[in-house]
Length: 136
Image (cartoon, rainbow, N blue to C red; front, top):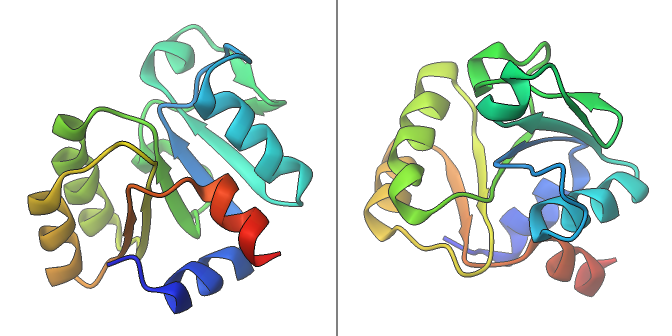
C-alpha cells in the first residue's frame, strides 16, 4: 500500500472515477477533481444522489455506481466515509478494476487488505492532488 511506484503509474493513467464527487465547489472532492481535470485527466463522477437527479459535475454526467460507468476507469478515487470502502472494493473486484486511491483522512485497513488480496493496488490516506503536485 502507498508505494511510490504505484502512485507514479496511476498518474500515467488518464481516466479517474471519483466516488463521492460533490457538485459543491467548496468541497475537497470537487476542487481536487477539478484540479485533476485541469491536468488532463477525465473525471467520471460517481454519486447516486446526483445521478438520480440527472446532474452533471465538472461537465460530466454523474453515475450511480462504478458498474454504470460508460467506460472502464483506470483509477477509482474515493471521497467517502471509511465504512463505505469495503463495498467499493467489492464492486471493484467484481468489475476487475485494479487501482484504488482513497483520499487523505479516509482509512479502512481491512478493506485495503481485501483489495490487495484481490489484486488491487491501493493508495490510502493520501490526497491525489497533493501527490500529483509533488511528482509533476
